[in-house]
Image (cartoon, rainbow, N blue to C red; front, side):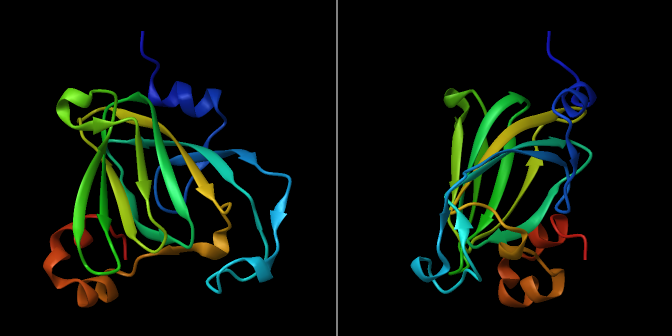
Length: 168
């Protein structure tokens, strides 16, 4: 029997995420990479890697955002998840995270550093439970939520998806 979204939120002790959905950090490497060994886009040292649990319900969305690090999404439970990606060159692609490869779904999706991305649950009245791994490790200093007007100005061909996946 599949658990409800609220059961997962309670069981995993998830809290609201600024991009939408719910999350909790589940791992942060104890060792760090010194700032002088990282690319200039990082302001300070970073842990080797971090992971979170992330749950998104179909009545919500993960707002477009970008990170300074690569992020790998892992499918755990629930409905498939569409991840909408706009790369720095302006190319849009949709990747589907899920457990049915016959339908073009993947158990893991890699988002390259610097890409704008957001997500939507594919089925109404459902949710998706995922995990996200970031390396070098996540730091909110490396997290940028998209500004709707600025992103539309930069990528006018993708205005519809930008409007759908931004809150401001």
